[in-house]
Length: 519
Image (cartoon, rainbow, N blue to C red; front, side, top):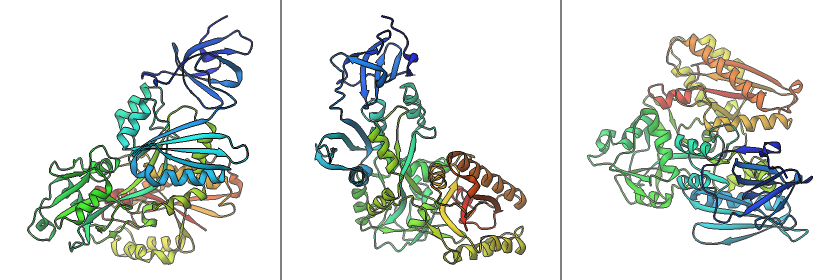
C-alpha cells in the first residue's frame, strides 16, 4: 500500500507547535485502499480530519477515507466542538447572548454549564432528535491569552479588543494558522469606544485629544495645566495584558509615538477601574463606553471648538475618534459546520439586535437625515478655509441635500492607504447588503473628504481617489450582487466638511474619510 504526500487530497499547512495532550494517532485510508496517511488527530469537524503528520498539518476530506486507530471519532455520535478564548468583556455577556439566540433560530435547545469562574460550556441539543450536536466552550481571560491559546491549538476563535500584534501574526503564520492580518481572518463582532472618565465632582466636561494623550503619557501631570486646580493627575488604566489597556496605546498614544506613563495605576477589571476613578477626585481613566459605572464621561474636543461624545451613531460612523472594534479572530483552517453557521449569524440583522441589547454598539446600518446634520453643515461654513469658496459649499449642499447619510463610513490607518479594521468590516457588511438587494434601484454615492493640510485642489483629488478605491473594494466583495440594478457613483468635496480640527493626528485622521449617501 502506497504512502504518499497528502497533497493528493489534502491541504498542507506547516505546524511548529506541540499538539494537544488529548490527541491520538490515527491512519486515514482511501476508499480503494491505495493511499494511507498516518498521524496524530488534531481535530474532526464532522466533514474533515486535521492531522499532524511527517509532512506537516494536513486537512483531509472525510468522505474519501476511512479512519483506523484509537483516536478515530464516531461518525454517528459526532459532536462539534468550538473553543473561544480571550477578552472577558466579550465572553461575559456578548458571546453568550449571541449563542443563545443562534441556538433558538437554528432549532436547538441550549444548556449552559459553568465550569469555573473563567470557563463556561454551552451545549446545543437538536430539538427534534434530542441529540447533542455542538458544544461551545468560552474561556474568559484577556486578549493576550486568547491569542496564546490559539497558537497552542487550544482555541478556535479569539475574542480580542485590539488588532493582532505583528509578533502574534508571525507566530500564527509559523504555526500554520494563516495570515491573521489578511482579509477573512478577523471580523468585527461589535463596536466599543474609549471614553475619558472622571470623578463626578470634577468640573471638566471636555478635553482635547492631544491633551488627553499627553495626560496618559505623563507629559501633562497636573490639573493646573488643563485649567484646573493645582493638583497632580492620577492616571488609571487597565492591566497591560488587557485588550482595553492595549487599545489605549494603539488608538490614543500610538499616533504620537508615546507610551502609557509609568506612574499610572493599573486595574485588573473594567469595573475596578471605573470605581477607582469615582473615588479619586484628581483621577482620570479611559474606559469602555459600556463600563463607565458611576464615573463622569467627558467629551473629546479640538482646540478649534469641535466636541464629540461617544454615542451610537458617532461610534458607527467613526466620527468619534477613539472607537474600539471588538474582534473575533479565526485561523486559516476549516471550522465545523455549526461554527461556520454561527459566524454567518453574527452578521445578520437578528445578531445586531442582540448586540445592541447586550449594551454594545451594533453594526446595523442607520440613515441620518440632512436635518440631523445641521451642526456639520454649519461647521463646514464656519471652518471652510480661504480655498473653499461659496460655490463649492453650494455644490455640496445641492448634491447631498436630497440624500441621507448612512452610518457606514470608511477611514484609513494612520499614514496608510489601507482601510482601518472597522472600515474593512464595513466593506463586508455593505457588500452583503448589495448582494441581498437592499439597495436595488437606489443611488449610492461614495463621497470623499480630506483634512485641510496642503492645497485644496490636491486634497479634493486625493479624496476622490479614496472614494473610487472604496467603491471598487465594495464592488469586488459583492460577488453575487446584480449591478444592473445598482447605481453607485463617486464624488468628493475635499476639506469642505471637517469633522475635527486639523491641529492633531487624530483630527486629521477623522477628517480623511469616505462617506456613503443614499437616495
